[in-house]
Amino acid sequence: MSVNIHTLSNGFRVVTETMPSMKSASLGIWVMAGGRHERVEQNGIAHFLEHMAFKGTKRRSALQIAEEIEDVGGYINAYTSREMTAYYARVLEDDVPLALDVIADITLNPQFDPREIEVERGVILQEIGQVLDTPDDVIFDWLQEVAYPEQALGRSILGPSERVRGFSRADLEGFVAEHYGPDRMILAAAGAVDHDQIAKLAEDLFGHLPRARPDRVEPALFTGGERLEIRPLEQVHFALAFETPGYRDDEIYTAQIYSTALGGGMSSRLFQEAREKRGLCYTIFAQTGAYADTGLTTIYAGTAADQIGDLAGLTIDELKRAADDMTEAEIARARAQMKAGLLMGLESPSSRAERLARLLSIWDRVPDLDEVIQRIDAVTTAGVTAFAARMADDARTALTMYGPVEHAPRIADLRERLAA
Image (cartoon, rainbow, N blue to C red):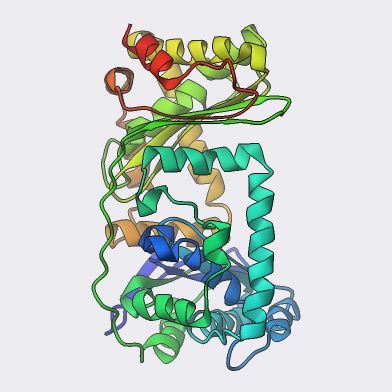
């Protein structure tokens, strides 16, 4: 397998990885424009724009977009995150030029038909309603807002309903003009791909685009806080977060191994203590996510109203204990889980294309797998213990709870227990 990178004169980047045994390919355009790039009055527009890409272009109707990919047995989709928007497809080897043409068309030439805008507005409002009705979805949006208040990074990707109701064609066109420059786009492809062919197609499709204006992103400022929403649900949904390193920080690997050992699987401390030994919950986990300049280690659990005090207290106690007695065996297991997850995921061309785009956007290169494995292996038990101690000493905490939380502990109670 080989990774090749090519940059057009206008800054548009192409990265491919050929997988000789594959008969299919995954490819897409990753645009460095997401929820974090929105002004407050634009909140939700990056996601709205992603929806509109499939509603017709100057060359294709919405039906034709779907038919051209599905007529050859392919698959096409998109997503919006806080730092990027992706439009991608998976097709057989011979259909790569077709898929790239369709993706370029929906990315560069959306029609923004006023009738389709209204149709999709209704779809997005339904999506917002669905999230609000799903406690273990909405609680993470609230946690993000509490962690980064009054900041683009803290706002919901879907946006509030009142904003979505007001977006116009001009708003969509303005966001594209502001952020969809070639120097903020990456074409990534993996599987049965020919780098020279894709680079030539990229030149034809994207080489004429002018560069965008320099982008400004508001720096992240984690402050923490709490939000408790009382609802007559069967369970309390509990989410706790601490700030951890961004993805350009070498300590991101330590943070990920820490959260894996703490709550990343059935053998983890939180799962064993909270579920297996005490039966306080059905679901509990810890995970670490990262952005360019910040990150979050998050713990989530769901439990009965009369057990939330015990569960929250146990969680704080495990955070403190991790700073004192993390074992070599636990760290070795967490390292193995991370490496296995990485390597197993890369058996898919879709995962490889995603990895190519993300790493190129972060480092302007694609580190070898061996380099990443070495960084994981370099994380020591002493390093994780020191990291855990800093987490336990950090008074800034974000907490959200949803459900019958009238008698649940507050963030001041948890901070006091953490400091004791």
